Image (tube, rainbow, N blue to C red; front, side, top):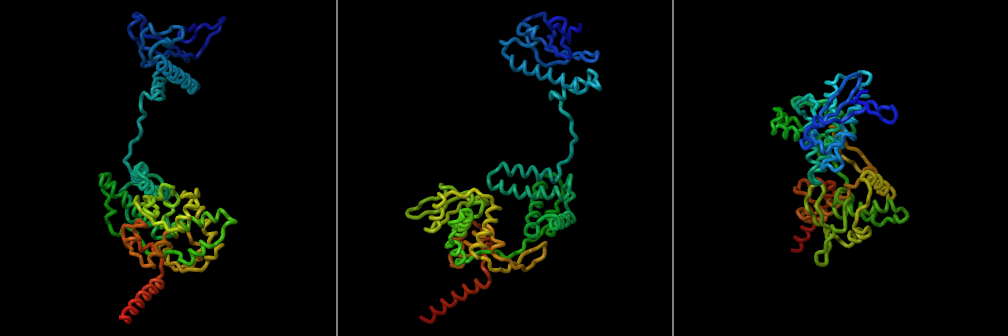
Length: 433
């Protein structure tokens, strides 16, 4: 009988393929000694160090485990079980092609995590750095998280555009031109302004990694390594259309009524989707007899105060000052239904960039409306009323007047009408004097 691997069980029966645990020395019951795992297979005897030591007085020769009252009983016992299970698993996994005892020990060391498998090292590339940049942005505040989404979209497109590594030095004019062409032809991107965001993100990542001395590619400094933004037409409602939306009775269709109401809230507050979709009662404050909507913009993290007139306050109160739970996509889809039913279907001419070429295209308002048009509507209506732009920017959260004016969806004719009205006022004042 193999004393290491077999022991009598009942009448003449024996248990094979068993891992036994022996102490190296029993001479001094008070002196800690090494615990070894012993396993016999294919006429070979494996002796493997468990890396645990124990005093013989705390060891049970019968169970081959520490005594239950041993201070580290659970930790040592659990580890011995793991070693035993791993040895048995490796034995069965390699039964058809038995390992030598040395190779068996090496396999054990790897599986038990005693040695690290050396991996091939490689220099960090653009994709690696972009991913780490996204991870850093996601670990920050909400503003950075939203920025991470923009870089995340770029990452997905770059991985589709060019599989595998993208060395920093490989990003040149040809890379830029090929990527733009691919974006126009192989993805849904059609606006030059969308491509502008992509290229600006690439330049930003190149600049950051360049400062960290990960490469020497300074193509981001070249003026030609860019895609300019183009001014396109924007869409906004006039006061008459806003009133038509407000007056329409949607009481028989709660789904569309809710979407209509929250679009009006945007038209009356200048809030983006990212802001009016996360409103809560604590965003409403009272100042004397007046109420304001006070929050930090999700996109810019800038604090804004929006005056609440009676109509806006009552609309928010209707929903207990708490936003709807709906996706941006569904909101926009339902909003198009709202416009069709209300009859805001007249055609407008939109000048837009399509794959780098400026084109004039005619659309029905109901086909192109989206949540963001509420914000543009607020800016346009209040701009035409002649309120100081500086005060309007406090509500929209814009830092620059140029950026604010880009939100004003007022036609050149409407601006001319306003100028004409102001000029007439001046003429009347002069004639009276």
